[in-house]
Length: 447
Image (cartoon, rainbow, N blue to C red):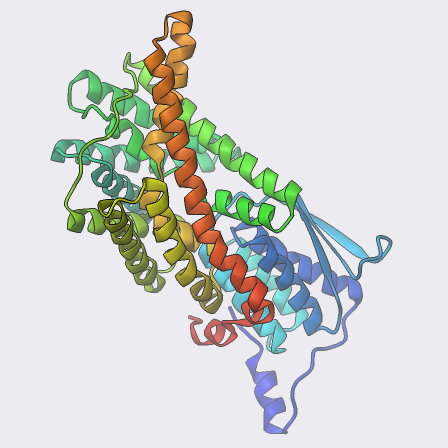
């Protein structure tokens, strides 16, 4: 982006601080809404989105209040319902850390009066139109992430790991292709999961898959919308009930689309999803290294720049080691996940503020190896079997489903609260600092 630095340098040479040209209230509100919409649509937390709009308006001597809802943002000059206001349609269904970073940098430039209103509006439009990561990087990340999760969850044979990687890469290519012809947010994960189910089912029929059906499941686990779950939980805990429930409902619908896709794919080739519990353990070093590769994959999915990747990878590997160590000392899976996520939340909260990166995406990328994806999909498969068998379903099947469901719920809740607690505490203790941290980084890190 190009900032109007010559004007600022000339004013500073005269010993003056440049001031923005007079603008109308409507133009200021429109700019605040435009910047907030980019953040809202790409995974930023609601609190920081609202604060960003207020910062843009304050830079022009105005006050602004943002009212976020699923599907739209409203900004107005004060709390009076009849005050000047503007509305834009925007759905918080995307995750793009690069767009969030560039938007935060632009807002910092607006606050320092380096970016006039007209140029700022053009800059926000340019940022909103930035492309995601390249197709090659996206497909490679999907392959690496699914293979890494396969190792974490017990894939043993090299052929199985290769098939997991190829299935995930093919799913990534399919998702990008579908994105060109449809904006439906559920079609892409459903189709990729359907493909994974077909490939995994064929591998199962040829006896190339392990009893855990990881060839079918691991490519689906890289589709789980973790940041939306975290943002929804944060909104609920901050009493934004309507928006929080909408975010969670969206995430659960994506999970339902993934589950339906993989089950239909398996059913289509005459395969099933086994309910045998995972039992294989792997050496700690391999476990931790595989977790690091999974973090790399999710960072790539979310368009995190290369130079920022080492930090979440390192934090994710440490969290995985902490979780494994806690379990070896007798902690439950949920308690171990909570401890690991508490560490990640404590590190990522100040780091996200400093680097101007969205907390949910940055944090979830670091803990992706902890998600109980196998339990979730097996529970869904068990429910389908009960529906098929009806009264003939054995009682043991219901106990397996309840066990998988309970384990999944406890681990997800432990992960969510472990990640969110440090973030909410930081906002409560230092709200002003949390909103303003990273201004220097926003300029120094520009490229």
